Image (tube, rainbow, N blue to C red; front, side, top):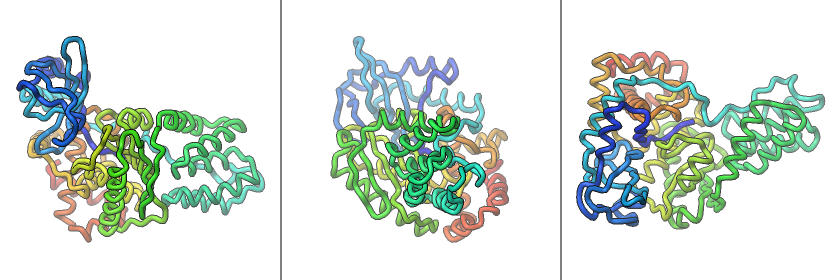
Length: 424
């Protein structure tokens, strides 16, 4: 799974001093606008009086003027929305505590399972008598090449001939990756009735939860993407703009990296609540790619520069995944750079200080699934990934990076050199 970073301020995981600082946060000036989103043109939910107690949820990382998701507590009533940094009193003390907590806890990558498990791996002898091994091998190759719809069409022919549990399981995986969750559940249900399989049982439960919470039924088709969106959240005009952004981003990134696809990439836009429930992503995440692009949206979502960056970030992940399997630091660093994200000076300074103290991990150790990193570790891991990719482009230029992606065996040597160049 690959994610776009929002810095979640997970107060329960930080030090006591930070929690104390968080308790002192409040609205700075009278009539501060609590908005439905970060952009100045999003609707105002309520005008908050000065002194209103606040609980921070997350901040959009990389912003020149940060925007915070907050809970405002007043007279027994709680409201959630967005405030600018200028509207919050006590942030200086809180931010200092956040940085200290990050150093105290160190930086490391989680070994948690990824949100996009690999296709079921079956040897030829795992399939019943009569099942075409040629068909199975071709389908597995197409799934690997991110052509699941093509694989599903091929497997459906075999499924009609043979009720083999492993064949059904593989066809269900192809259906899921092709964004046909209904068919995936049908195929897996048949498979599990014939033979138990823990991996398929886990997938079945996951996709069953996804389908139960997903309300995104409207579809728009672009050149290289199909956009499925929640009409009650995203206006149709915004959905069309999103479609154009993903198509244009794919064309741009593809020209730089050389990724190609014969199938449209599913892009799912839904309410933030539905996004969290269907993907099981960390609350700080603002987007996810698991073979399909997932984007959370606010009710009445309008296309903003922030929304474009999120879409571009996840589209870059999709493009990279068409070229192969890459370490987390390269995936996340490339997605940040090619979506136009820049590192905040404070983040750069913090990384430099940690490098000087010998507290940064080597890039090869930033593996596994970042979705379960706590917020301060995620913040620094994403910063380190972007710093590494910036240095990569300085060293190799665009053509050199493209060549590297065609020669992945060179990556270990390159990452070791980057460790030295960024002070590890």
